[in-house]
Length: 620
Image (cartoon, rainbow, N blue to C red; front, side, top):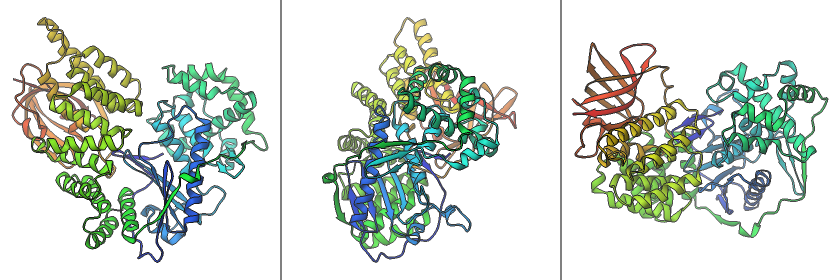
């Protein structure tokens, strides 16, 4: 179970010592889907690269319909010994008595890193990497997996062993078996209903049962699939993705659940559990592997970037300073400087760093995309609109399957109120690439409103609402739906059945569409406050205060009391104007002061005079 930090999933926190000067050059081996970088030999790098390509092929063989590749290659740092590995791993694992890692997987929308220790010992030293690779595959797949199956498959495949002539999958975890034999299983109806908000997913004493049972049921079904020559798991996944509730889908795919519970208990009680062996070699095209020796500056820059991604900010910055003294035009170092500035909310510094990086490496799509994000956030859009558009077009041209850039270019055109047909095609492509990304669908609905297609926008929002259980996302979807329906009703009253006015949508959407896919990782935010009832109030806004990166608080004076309202992300607030046409784009940090507004908010459970903002509707 991992923490979401803006767009990055991490296993860790950080801060320690930087690697010492390198005695041997580092080697890079590129394959069609992976980049392996090692401080060991080229032979070792090629072996690791082949193993990862075969791992990918094994997953693709089992899940032929899943999208197993991202637009960005996975970067594998294969470190030869424990000392050099510890110079890169997160600080939380450096403490005395901490778990000794063999590997970890850091995922984000922009880059995906794997850190491996080549001298790792134990039967399955890379279980964490395989576990996270399964989650990675299904996060890019168009198929949604219920929580129990998502975790069960990850646990099942994490013990995979890929050999020259066979692949072993699903070797039983003896700790899970002993635990389940000593503890009562959850009713299957409970197991199937667990989601990421459930105590069975979060609380240690309950989560232990959930994870172990999810593994055991997945193991049983996978073994049964091989024996019976039918695949109930794929049948189950197809049903839940067609909006059948998980319990009904399980009964249809797996049979009577009471009988299944009995069979599972009998299965767990066996003296030994089987596992799968797939005979036959998994071939890879080794001729496509390209090797080269890295310069010390290049390998230092890679280390600095990885340290930044795992939030060892101090160590990363020290190494970057040394690199830029020796090589002031190093694109990778400037790119990582942009990442660090972005994390601190210093958008102009980030834009400057990415601009320098782009001059040195104009073929890097991620640098172009990152510059555009930072430049938009820094403000002054009118003065650099052409450069932003050029950067986004470069990103989409250099990497046509990088969905965030497609989505952002569509958002840019919405802001500019032009090229809306092209924007719609871009947004459709982003949704095709990442079908389960709710934000892309919400942005597509915003675009459809601008195109005066409110019915289509409502249909898209309905689909988006079925793809998430996140309360904030559902509230945002509902607010948008209500705004579209309310505006359409007002127009119909005036005999104008063409959706929301363009100016009103501009106020609402130009903030949301640009922002919905945050750029990079930041320190994990405080937990959201517990929400009370949903309320609506009308009054005068005052004391509007914004702070980095996107926190806002303000007061609403009206009626018997003054409300103190807050939001941790003012970009996610839905803005609109009900009875007038704004003259220009809205900046919530400067343009809300002394305005009359209707505000929807969640009342605080600790104070009746505080609330969490959902939407702000400005009025004359």
